[in-house]
Image 1 (cartoon, rainbow, N blue to C red):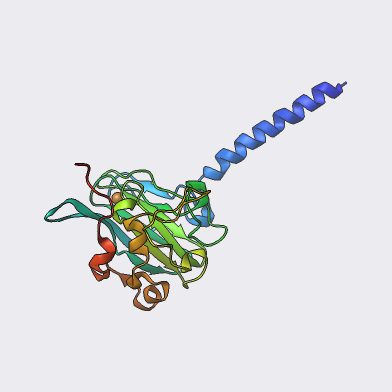
Image 2: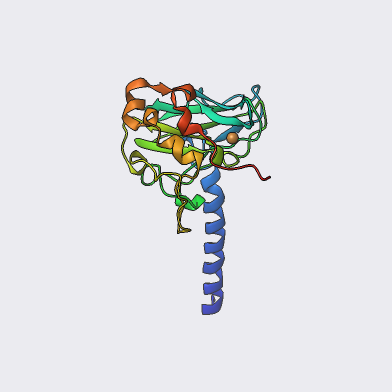
Length: 227
Ligand SMILES: [Cu+2]
């Protein structure tokens, strides 16, 4: 005979197991995204790692000197990109210490991706590795590199049409916002995303917008070196 206490215990146990299974289950590579997780993407640790599906677009994670300023430019190339729903982008780490994340409240940031899109992120990528992400929902996706957002390393992917929360420009970089529930794009990252070349409709019209098409003013460093 099953006592009430034993019954409750077994239900609780089943809930825990179900919960853990669900948690890990969500991270399994799912056929619906072609082996590319909607939160974790897919990391290829070298160019020899076979991708689960061939990418439709390529973005490079770049660094280049800007003499006489000692801090180089950190940027996504291209910086604006049009893709169609369901297409996959390969982010290639041709230089070190970059990552790719979306502006999402679960990253502490204002939502700048279509409603319902999860917080997603690559790891910090070793040189020679790549990261794949499949963009399923239509709208604007603003992305940042964790280590280099303040230096301007952000980009805009438009999936199909320039709609959704990312379609309105972020607030200007200065003055810095009050600390709130979530933060907008910050410093040079904000200036880059406000550049007219990255207007969503311009990206739709042109297909790609390169870093060189942005004005020098949008790339100015807003962080000073400590004396
Ligand atoms: Cu970076």
